[in-house]
Length: 125
Length: 125
Length: 125
Length: 125
Image (cartoon, rainbow over all chains, first blue to last red):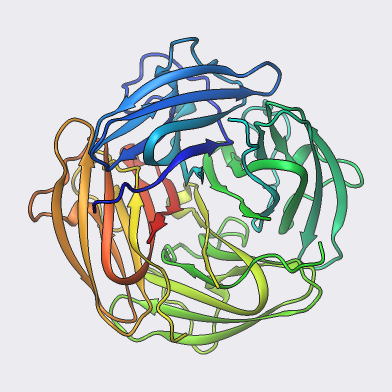
């Protein structure tokens, strides 16, 4: 597996952090994640840009995924340059300096219920 | 990110609006959405056509996604030329004059339950 | 939209009919579907083959999707040459004589719960 | 269907085994699966490698999918060289000596709830 796997540009059109009650465990709290695999030999430096319905894009958010590691990046955890507002529609574009593969997942546990959804992101070159 | 990202033709074969009880909040009401990211510098003009199991296609539905914005378009909100009937199987084809990326999501909250599903749409050129 | 949209060969690796209690409405009964859009001007004739974990493939199952129509085909409804056994792992391959687009969806309502999942099928040419 | 269908390299960036209570039936126990269809005439020999957030990759896990069969491989069932730890983020890369098609599914039944998610894996050549 010498050739790096994946693409350098990924898009997740769907984005929404369900407004959730506080006090839940991290595992069960409503969240949205971009799961990024960097199977290559070089660290991946990601630049995330968030797009909204009614205001200019935000970013870049800078994230590193070490070589041969995975990062399940929660959008809830992004704070710099600004946190992602719960309850707002957004989209994300992820640019990487080396090939990676990205999958989008949401866990929604509002009202003690449980729903999951996932899809590969849209990869471009 | 100078090159527009995405494709001009997208297909969502699955479509179904769960017949839901009235009175829920907009966030928790059963719905189906086409999440469209227009990351480019030009407004995107979309033409939606809906296909059914037992009657001719309906449309076009005309929708604009401004430059550098996202639109989480709910099929429940389409009214012109005709609303989408709840409880009926349908598919949708989305044509855009500039490249966009489309993801399909359904939230089903019938009977106070909660289920989610999502997938990238099928992009063609 | 003169060119037919889609591909002629589709694969759904995941297949499983949740064994469900009888007496539910058709809408709420656990089921698995291949949602097929035929946006073209010619009827699509499909041949489905089912693959199992522990026995030879079954089929072909013959299904027609009329021109400019969608078919949300429930695997639960397949009977000829043989019904799909609930509770067994399977995969499906769908061949069409004209281009179509296929999305896979499962609704699981065991024990009065509700879960959904969906993905585009794998399209080949 | 003489040409083998699929690709030889597949990536699933998302991976997480929900820590679940013991004593559930196999069907209802939280699990994560890679559903692999080998529609070809030759057995497929798979090599799985797991990537983690904070330690080196694990593997290879060796699995065979017989010709013209499907395998819904549960990550919970992998034991050699080491079991997959519940509650940890991981990703998987699947290499096959013949073309196959791979779909990722998770069933999460924590607390007697039920959530499902699925997506095609990312196929490369």
